[in-house]
Amino acid sequence: MHDPRIIVALDFSSAEDALRLAGRLEPRLCRLKVGKELFTAAGPNLVEKLMLKGFDIFLDLKFHDIPNTVANACKAAAHLGVWMINVHALGGRKMLMAAREAIAQGSTKLIAVTLLTSMDQNDLADIGLQGNPEQIVERLTRLAKDCALDGVVCSALEAANLRQQIGKDFCLVTPGIRPFNNQADDQKRITTPNLAILNGANYLVIGRPITKASDPLIALQQIHESIIL
Ligand code: C5P
Image (cartoon, rainbow, N blue to C red):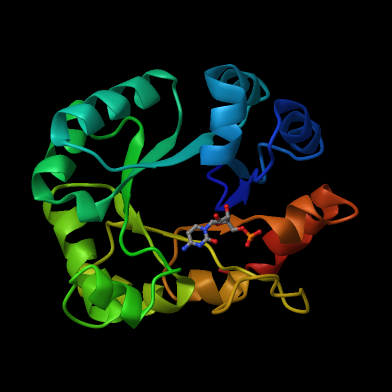
Protein backbone atom coordinates (compact mmCIF):
# COMPACT_ATOMS: atom_id res chain seq x y z
CA MET A 1 0.00 0.00 0.00
CA HIS A 2 1.35 3.45 -0.80
CA ASP A 3 1.50 6.13 1.89
CA PRO A 4 2.24 9.41 0.09
CA ARG A 5 3.89 11.96 2.37
CA ILE A 6 2.91 15.01 0.35
CA ILE A 7 -0.45 16.62 1.08
CA VAL A 8 -1.39 19.18 -1.58
CA ALA A 9 -3.31 22.14 -0.12
CA LEU A 10 -6.31 22.84 -2.35
CA ASP A 11 -6.58 26.52 -1.45
CA PHE A 12 -9.31 27.30 -3.98
CA SER A 13 -12.68 29.00 -3.69
CA SER A 14 -14.67 26.68 -5.95
CA ALA A 15 -15.23 22.97 -6.55
CA GLU A 16 -14.43 23.43 -10.25
CA ASP A 17 -10.95 24.81 -9.60
CA ALA A 18 -10.25 22.13 -6.99
CA LEU A 19 -11.40 19.30 -9.25
CA ARG A 20 -9.43 20.67 -12.20
CA LEU A 21 -6.22 20.65 -10.14
CA ALA A 22 -6.98 17.23 -8.63
CA GLY A 23 -7.46 15.92 -12.16
CA ARG A 24 -3.85 16.82 -12.90
CA LEU A 25 -2.44 15.00 -9.86
CA GLU A 26 -2.08 11.35 -8.89
CA PRO A 27 -3.34 9.70 -5.66
CA ARG A 28 -0.26 7.46 -5.75
CA LEU A 29 1.93 10.53 -5.16
CA CYS A 30 -0.11 12.79 -2.89
CA ARG A 31 -3.05 13.34 -0.59
CA LEU A 32 -5.21 16.47 -0.68
CA LYS A 33 -6.06 19.07 1.95
CA VAL A 34 -9.48 20.75 1.93
CA GLY A 35 -9.61 23.79 4.20
CA LYS A 36 -12.25 26.20 5.51
CA GLU A 37 -12.63 28.28 2.34
CA LEU A 38 -13.12 25.39 -0.06
CA PHE A 39 -15.25 23.35 2.33
CA THR A 40 -17.50 26.32 3.05
CA ALA A 41 -17.93 26.93 -0.67
CA ALA A 42 -18.19 23.36 -1.92
CA GLY A 43 -19.03 21.14 1.07
CA PRO A 44 -19.11 17.38 1.57
CA ASN A 45 -20.10 16.84 -2.05
CA LEU A 46 -16.70 17.97 -3.24
CA VAL A 47 -14.93 15.88 -0.61
CA GLU A 48 -16.80 12.84 -1.89
CA LYS A 49 -15.85 13.60 -5.50
CA LEU A 50 -12.18 13.93 -4.58
CA MET A 51 -12.30 10.63 -2.69
CA LEU A 52 -13.95 8.95 -5.68
CA LYS A 53 -10.90 10.00 -7.69
CA GLY A 54 -8.87 7.93 -5.23
CA PHE A 55 -7.41 10.67 -3.03
CA ASP A 56 -7.14 10.57 0.76
CA ILE A 57 -8.44 13.83 2.23
CA PHE A 58 -7.14 15.88 5.12
CA LEU A 59 -10.16 17.96 6.17
CA ASP A 60 -8.50 21.00 7.72
CA LEU A 61 -11.37 22.64 9.61
CA LYS A 62 -9.54 23.20 12.92
CA PHE A 63 -12.51 22.64 15.23
CA HIS A 64 -12.48 24.68 18.47
CA ASP A 65 -15.65 24.76 20.60
CA ILE A 66 -17.15 23.16 23.70
CA PRO A 67 -16.31 19.44 24.01
CA ASN A 68 -19.75 18.15 23.01
CA THR A 69 -19.91 20.30 19.88
CA VAL A 70 -16.39 19.39 18.80
CA ALA A 71 -17.02 15.69 19.42
CA ASN A 72 -20.10 15.79 17.20
CA ALA A 73 -18.32 17.79 14.49
CA CYS A 74 -15.47 15.25 14.53
CA LYS A 75 -17.96 12.40 14.20
CA ALA A 76 -19.62 14.11 11.24
CA ALA A 77 -16.23 14.73 9.58
CA ALA A 78 -15.06 11.17 10.14
CA HIS A 79 -18.38 9.93 8.77
CA LEU A 80 -17.44 11.52 5.43
CA GLY A 81 -14.68 8.93 5.25
CA VAL A 82 -11.80 11.40 5.26
CA TRP A 83 -8.27 10.30 6.11
CA MET A 84 -7.40 13.06 8.61
CA ILE A 85 -9.13 15.86 10.54
CA ASN A 86 -7.92 18.44 13.06
CA VAL A 87 -8.90 20.46 16.12
CA HIS A 88 -7.23 23.30 18.05
CA ALA A 89 -5.16 22.12 21.01
CA LEU A 90 -6.04 25.44 22.67
CA GLY A 91 -9.56 24.03 23.11
CA GLY A 92 -8.04 22.24 26.12
CA ARG A 93 -7.87 18.76 27.58
CA LYS A 94 -11.62 18.08 27.91
CA MET A 95 -12.24 19.11 24.31
CA LEU A 96 -9.32 17.02 23.01
CA MET A 97 -10.46 13.99 24.97
CA ALA A 98 -14.03 14.38 23.71
CA ALA A 99 -12.72 14.57 20.14
CA ARG A 100 -10.63 11.43 20.73
CA GLU A 101 -13.57 9.53 22.20
CA ALA A 102 -15.71 10.52 19.22
CA ILE A 103 -13.36 8.91 16.70
CA ALA A 104 -12.06 5.40 17.18
CA GLN A 105 -8.27 5.21 17.12
CA GLY A 106 -7.00 3.67 13.90
CA SER A 107 -9.76 5.13 11.72
CA THR A 108 -9.69 8.80 10.64
CA LYS A 109 -6.49 10.37 11.95
CA LEU A 110 -7.11 13.08 14.54
CA ILE A 111 -4.45 15.75 14.91
CA ALA A 112 -4.21 19.11 16.67
CA VAL A 113 -3.07 22.55 15.66
CA THR A 114 -0.84 23.86 18.44
CA LEU A 115 -0.22 27.59 17.96
CA LEU A 116 -1.11 29.37 14.76
CA THR A 117 2.17 30.42 13.17
CA SER A 118 0.64 33.83 12.48
CA MET A 119 0.86 34.58 16.22
CA ASP A 120 3.96 36.24 17.62
CA GLN A 121 5.01 36.99 21.20
CA ASN A 122 2.83 40.14 21.35
CA ASP A 123 -0.25 38.24 20.19
CA LEU A 124 0.39 35.63 22.87
CA ALA A 125 0.72 38.31 25.55
CA ASP A 126 -2.55 39.88 24.31
CA ILE A 127 -4.46 36.69 25.06
CA GLY A 128 -2.57 36.01 28.29
CA LEU A 129 -0.49 33.01 27.20
CA GLN A 130 2.71 32.55 29.22
CA GLY A 131 6.01 31.60 27.62
CA ASN A 132 7.54 31.93 24.18
CA PRO A 133 5.98 30.30 21.10
CA GLU A 134 8.39 27.32 21.18
CA GLN A 135 7.53 26.51 24.80
CA ILE A 136 3.81 26.79 24.14
CA VAL A 137 4.03 24.59 21.04
CA GLU A 138 5.87 21.95 23.06
CA ARG A 139 3.35 22.13 25.89
CA LEU A 140 0.37 21.83 23.56
CA THR A 141 2.03 18.95 21.68
CA ARG A 142 2.45 17.06 24.97
CA LEU A 143 -1.18 17.78 25.82
CA ALA A 144 -2.31 16.43 22.43
CA LYS A 145 -0.23 13.28 22.96
CA ASP A 146 -1.57 12.91 26.49
CA CYS A 147 -5.10 12.96 25.11
CA ALA A 148 -4.15 10.19 22.64
CA LEU A 149 -4.41 12.30 19.52
CA ASP A 150 -2.51 10.97 16.51
CA GLY A 151 -0.31 14.01 15.98
CA VAL A 152 0.04 17.77 15.54
CA VAL A 153 0.54 20.35 12.83
CA CYS A 154 3.86 22.13 13.37
CA SER A 155 6.49 24.04 11.42
CA ALA A 156 9.19 21.87 9.92
CA LEU A 157 11.69 23.87 11.96
CA GLU A 158 9.95 22.86 15.19
CA ALA A 159 9.71 19.23 14.04
CA ALA A 160 13.25 18.21 15.01
CA ASN A 161 12.84 19.30 18.64
CA LEU A 162 9.29 17.94 18.92
CA ARG A 163 10.34 14.59 17.46
CA GLN A 164 13.05 14.35 20.13
CA GLN A 165 10.68 15.32 22.94
CA ILE A 166 7.72 13.23 21.89
CA GLY A 167 9.18 10.03 20.43
CA LYS A 168 8.48 8.08 17.28
CA ASP A 169 4.82 7.18 17.27
CA PHE A 170 3.32 10.60 16.88
CA CYS A 171 2.47 12.18 13.59
CA LEU A 172 4.06 15.54 12.67
CA VAL A 173 2.39 17.36 9.77
CA THR A 174 4.36 20.34 8.51
CA PRO A 175 3.38 23.26 6.23
CA GLY A 176 5.80 26.05 5.23
CA ILE A 177 7.58 23.83 2.71
CA ARG A 178 9.39 25.24 -0.28
CA PRO A 179 11.38 23.12 -2.72
CA PHE A 180 14.89 24.38 -3.38
CA ASN A 181 14.76 27.49 -5.65
CA ASN A 182 11.05 28.13 -5.15
CA GLN A 183 9.77 31.53 -4.04
CA ALA A 184 8.71 31.83 -0.40
CA ASP A 185 5.36 33.58 -1.15
CA ASP A 186 4.03 34.79 2.22
CA GLN A 187 5.70 31.97 4.19
CA LYS A 188 8.43 33.25 6.52
CA ARG A 189 10.21 30.26 8.04
CA ILE A 190 10.48 27.77 5.23
CA THR A 191 12.17 24.38 4.88
CA THR A 192 12.86 22.14 1.90
CA PRO A 193 10.85 18.91 1.63
CA ASN A 194 13.86 16.72 2.32
CA LEU A 195 14.96 18.70 5.38
CA ALA A 196 11.44 18.57 6.79
CA ILE A 197 11.50 14.76 6.52
CA LEU A 198 15.00 14.64 8.03
CA ASN A 199 13.69 16.76 10.91
CA GLY A 200 11.12 14.07 11.62
CA ALA A 201 8.03 15.24 9.73
CA ASN A 202 5.69 12.46 8.58
CA TYR A 203 3.61 14.49 6.15
CA LEU A 204 4.30 17.73 4.27
CA VAL A 205 1.52 20.20 3.42
CA ILE A 206 2.45 21.94 0.18
CA GLY A 207 0.25 24.39 -1.71
CA ARG A 208 1.44 26.95 -4.23
CA PRO A 209 4.69 25.28 -5.32
CA ILE A 210 2.40 22.60 -6.80
CA THR A 211 -0.95 24.33 -7.41
CA LYS A 212 0.62 27.33 -9.19
CA ALA A 213 3.17 25.32 -11.17
CA SER A 214 2.73 25.28 -14.94
CA ASP A 215 2.67 21.49 -14.70
CA PRO A 216 1.49 20.49 -11.20
CA LEU A 217 2.19 16.79 -11.74
CA ILE A 218 5.79 17.42 -12.75
CA ALA A 219 6.23 19.74 -9.75
CA LEU A 220 4.79 17.02 -7.51
CA GLN A 221 7.03 14.34 -9.04
CA GLN A 222 10.12 16.52 -8.60
CA ILE A 223 9.31 17.14 -4.95
CA HIS A 224 8.61 13.46 -4.47
CA GLU A 225 12.00 12.56 -5.96
CA SER A 226 13.81 15.23 -3.93
CA ILE A 227 12.94 13.35 -0.74
CA ILE A 228 15.70 10.83 -0.32
CA LEU A 229 14.71 9.19 2.94
O1 C5P B 1 0.88 27.56 -0.61
P1 C5P B 1 1.53 27.07 0.67
O2 C5P B 1 2.48 25.91 0.45
O3 C5P B 1 2.14 28.20 1.45
O4 C5P B 1 0.29 26.51 1.50
C1 C5P B 1 0.44 25.97 2.77
C2 C5P B 1 -0.87 25.49 3.32
O5 C5P B 1 -0.65 25.16 4.68
C3 C5P B 1 -2.01 26.50 3.31
O6 C5P B 1 -3.24 25.78 3.16
C4 C5P B 1 -1.92 27.14 4.68
O7 C5P B 1 -3.16 27.63 5.14
C5 C5P B 1 -1.48 25.95 5.53
N1 C5P B 1 -0.80 26.31 6.77
C6 C5P B 1 0.34 27.08 6.83
N2 C5P B 1 0.93 27.37 8.01
C7 C5P B 1 0.41 26.91 9.13
C8 C5P B 1 -0.72 26.11 9.11
C9 C5P B 1 -1.32 25.84 7.90
O8 C5P B 1 0.84 27.50 5.79
N3 C5P B 1 1.02 27.16 10.27
